[in-house]
Structures are given as C-alpha cells and as structure tokens.
Image (cartoon, rainbow, N blue to C red):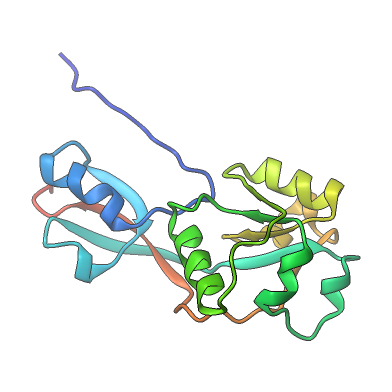
Length: 169
C-alpha cells in the first residue's frame, strides 16, 4: 500500500516554523517551505535556505502615496489596505508595526491570502497592499504597480527554507 500524501499550499502567506513544528514532531510532516528560524526548530526540523524574501507595500503607480519619499504607518489610516492573513508571519509583523505606532489596523482593510484578489483590489479599488514576493516584476503587472518606500521595525528579509525532519534522510 502507498503512504498517504497530503500537499498544503498557502499562496503568498508565509507561515513560520512554529506552525509546522508540532506536525513535524509527530511525524505528520516530512517537508515544508517556510520561514526557518533555527532557534525555534528544537532540533526537530532542519532547514536549507532556498531564497530570501521581504514584506512590501505595493500600489498602483498613479496612487498618491507613490509620489512620497517614504510612507509611514499613520498615512495608511485613510487608505483601503489589503493585508495578509494575520496568523501568517507577515500579518504578525504588521500587527506589531501598527501597535508600535500606537495605532489600530486601518478601518478600511481587507484580509486576502489570494494574490489574484489582492491585485484586483489594488487595480480596481486603488488599494495599497502588503505582499511578499516581488509582484512588480511579474510580467502581467509590470508597469502597473510600484513598491512604496517603507521602513519596517522588524528584521526583514526572511530566509525562506526547505525544512525537513532532522531524523529523515
């Protein structure tokens, strides 16, 4: 008989090693692509870096914030903001960023895990979106969107790694 195989894909919403560690400890997960944090791996998982990534704030090139030298968190309070899932690492970082400014999340916000939905909201509703990856280099969006200059308090970029159980060969 063949072993059961389960593939779970979370598009554009990085989850940390803590999210897969319990399944790795039980032997339910053999591999994962995630933000690897050695200090949280407990020797259960090992990681091999695949690439680096960072959190970006993206808007249409004609958005008023695209003309700013730098965008600050308070400027987002009146914008329609598309956020990654709050349980993902990017979402957790944004909770901390807004908290550090003493601000709640913007009142006009949408949480979206789908890249297509996010791009649609940016294009059609002139929203700004927090994304991972490099969307402005994707062919279908090249020339339409820009990265907005923003500094985050959290150490970014992340190391995206292929993680496996330490005991697996």
